[in-house]
Amino acid sequence: MVIVVTGTPGTGKSSLCRRIVSRNKGWVHLDLGRFAAEANVITGYDDSLETSIVDMNILKKALRKHVSDSVGEGVRLLIDGHYAAEVSPAEHVNYCLVLRCRPDVLWRRLRSKGYGEEKTRRNVESEITDYCYLMAKLHLKRKRIVQLDTTGSSVGKTYTRFMECYRYAFRCRGDAVDWADFLLKNLGKISFLFR
Image (cartoon, one colour):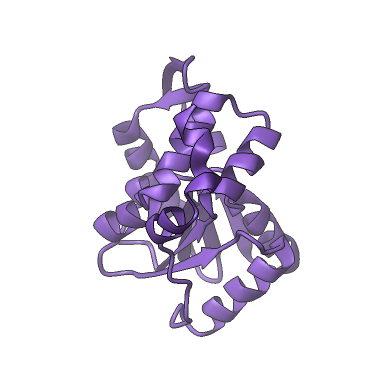
């Protein structure tokens, strides 16, 4: 079984995956950032965004081979990354979880993690425009995709919700996320985007 866990950086993907693996036998966490480095698909570094540049085509091929070779009976693989839906082999993916976070809260989370202002701004803009959710819908068309809003949620609470979704084959009720509507009603909360 393969579950893609995607979402903008800072939404809680890695924390959730670590919690799942620590509490459930047979689950494996594949962090795409580490996997990209180990697969030697990093082609450079973007100073303005403070991030590695990854050759997505080569990463896709390496990930497809890894998933084909490693997913056997009883293994539950969590593929964790903000571009996970774009590179995961759709034919092997069972479900997709998209973690979301309200833009003003995400801004604070990323800044407290040490992200620079430009990198934080780009990630918040990605969250506002539903980028990860839209990529999941585009690349994993026929898969069940569920969104969970982690804005006011602890890792424990998100884990509980994930396990409910898992138990019911992702037929669970996700969260309806509409940051555009939220921002229109709370313009003061996004003043950081216009500095």
